[in-house]
Image (cartoon, rainbow, N blue to C red; front, side):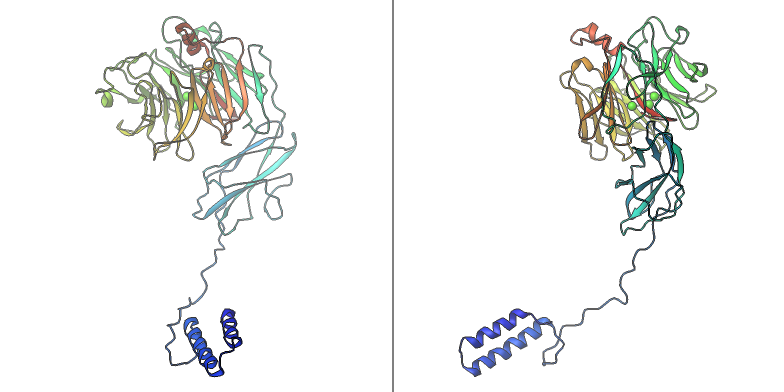
Length: 489
Ligand SMILES: [Ca+2]
Ligand SMILES: [Ca+2]
Ligand SMILES: [Ca+2]
């Protein structure tokens, strides 16, 4: 195809009134130069450039949809909400998940309007809202690849959203911020120690009514001396029982009627215990710990110690060896990771460590970022979230990318009356539940507070040592947003 700009040039030459011969010569030269440059296939004695090889056939079009999404489960989140979870897509060319909901059973998603698209492959949960309570709905999730291929045939799951359980109002605490459209709805499980005569574990609904309460009997706690606080940790187990730490006394599993169904007693226990998928229980012994103590113990269901970790094997050297502040390490949290390693928060050393099953430190995390780290968790994207406490800056939830060591998100609690802040949990919709001594807040990724539970009866004045101790001992410590059999800690 010839370029029309050449034709214009030719016309202009002729119109300029030059003599006919000159015009013809110029015209011929222009045509030849143009044909050579454009590679037109005309034999003019000038060799044409070699032909550009054309592929035997056009590149194969991807028509293969990603594999069906497996492991989809649905659970009631009350008042027209259903939570969905599924297994992460394995597609190399993943583009997004699509979530579907419908009253008729879904066997194919053809002609069903998507509820939601989720672009992040690591986000494998979604809260469907706006459903009619009391009506059964079917749900399906697909993976769509970058070409738009989607396996339309699905296996759907059914669930029913029931009315939110109602509870009793406690005048000493209540919810004073609640934006239903912006929260990850569920219930909130927390130890509440503000009345030291009546330490209890409570579960509150979104409006802040207490729907379940367990007062820890004197027989299950240390009622005098050290070790009362901090570290009254409680969490929901998959069997709907509750596991809790009674500091200085033991770790207990109770059913919802308050019966103790399992326990392991040790005066060394503090801060944190987790039930592992294999039924073992891992916990820390960090309050007033000595070099001779194991900071982490793992026991099986029969109470046999099957694993332990001693900080002295790795940290009995400068600058750590002579530290003493409510113990040597004041280890305050432990988490078994999916790779089999264990994440341990060494509060007094201002770091968290990942140790392998042999106990060797394979990674030191948060150095220079966290001061007195609290309750670290590994997120689905591999980042770490934990709380950092300073004396002169807001206590903050901080998320870091452990590969770069950089902060990717943080939220500070500026009001001192809410210090100390000791727990930050990332919720499945990206919100974060942060627990300060007199306030628990749920904040969005763009840092709006969309839910807040406030302890009204106690105002801590942490400028005094007594006030600081009260805030530490009597204030909120940790809280998990829970739903059915799952908790987000
Ligand atoms: Ca725990
Ligand atoms: Ca833990
Ligand atoms: Ca936590």
